[in-house]
Length: 166
Image (spheres, rainbow, N blue to C red):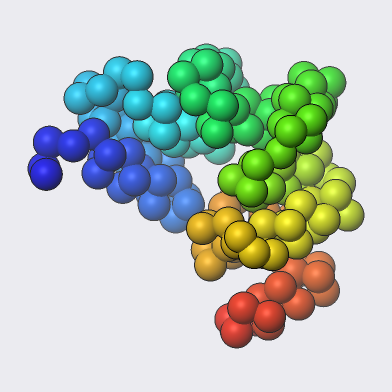
């Protein structure tokens, strides 16, 4: 369906992971024109804004996404961490960790990675890797939040266990 708001949202996600933040923002906006309450589009929009250093805009988008759907609340924690607002990032972490779902594991790992807490990031990445495996695990090398982990031997070990080249 060419009119589904999901297509531009997911296209925006790919642009975000590819470092093409303007394109990600454009696609997320297209999606939101079709459905202003699509949480995943708000998540992508906030994530691209955050990567551009537009933290206030990112926080607004992530706050709205988190209200619409708990599964997207993690973007707020990651953005707070990126903006140096560690106390607020930890409040989001505490909420997610109080009752984590298999979906949350991947995103909790991102927040810890941005906070610079590699041990905790890897603990949650391991949880994401274990069954039921988080659906994003095959793309572990792409989220900007994990860039700081790439040189760590534990990251290389995860890649090897997934049969990915180092």
